Image 1 (cartoon, rainbow over the protein chains, first blue to last red):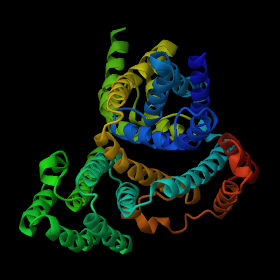
Image 2 (image 1 turned 90 degrees about the vertical axis):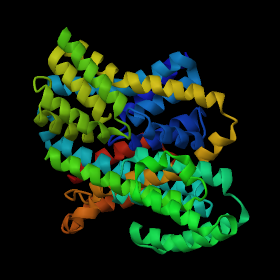
Image 3 (image 1 turned 60 degrees about the vertical axis):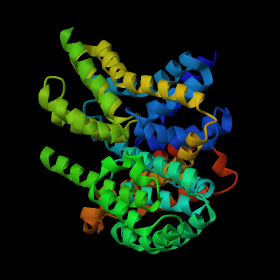
Image 4 (image 1 turned 45 degrees about the vertical axis):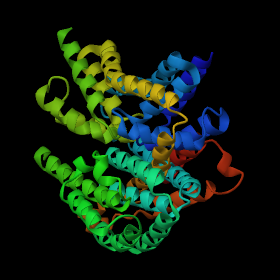
Length: 272
Length: 195
């Protein structure tokens, strides 16, 4: 029974997920959090983050995870099949019958309207999530940087998720003392006023250094910053060089994203 | 038959390597179109990307279904779609097991406390790109390289519809309506106002 229910719910979600994985979030919240209490909103966010940095489509990853959680292996199969079925059916129909389905004006009008509605839904969802998840200065720093790096600079979200996870690990594991909080608070104020990411990196450095004096000696840290900014993504996987501070980690995230962006551009060029 | 197995293998590989959402599959699909134009061409790929923006479902799934259907009918569509899904299915099951095991670990908790605000930021980024798509329909959405392109692409009717629907999502009783109703309302508005 549970498997059937999972299939039905995820079929419905799959049917109305226009415009990529994120568009399913309001539907997921409605069905899985509010209606069936399969998970909390926090868990939903966690699953989304996992979906970002694991292979495959986010919609499918989320369905598999929630299905497994609710109904074991069978549940996972049912939920995954459910979310995939609508597109399977629709694309087969389009491929077989409606080759020029996109050219029908009515379809275009309806789709534009749907896009507008999905945007409104995602906006209200985002506001809700910001209210519940951005509480401390560190949350704002991570969140705003993730937004800028992906939304404006077009970096791969998978990398952002990995860097954010590492930041959480080191920040809460090692650097959640009173001094750290002060330093981060000042950094957050300046970071929010900074316009571009590059100036932000420069601005956030001083308060981080101030905190540094209290815990570590300055030269050692400068070395860290140097190594991290000169090399790129490799450093984010090397914990030992990032542990002492949360700030170097941030600058690493920025440089990583920028490097990523460059490679993406190159890819685009070659494809063009 | 051999061709179908080959097709499935390629989609399996794509499913295994493309991390980070629907558009991450594009480079892999593009390579596939170059290697096997008999499955689908670059032009097919462009069509599917357009169709994917307007039908439910992720691009990767849609492309796999399309290519499988075109070459081997319904059976092909099923096989290639499941090949694409299988890797992430397995990976997620493994991750689920691991998370169950380390559920109460402080380390996992710390990681997730870093992830949640970032995940929110990513959703805000998705909201931004949808915002441009809906309100500035002819703008590429690339603020970094094409900020000037935003001029003249603003669509007033779309914006008014967006504002109306957004206000509805904030009004106490209306906001609890099912999101599907909002989507249907959007489709209705689009047909009515010829958006």
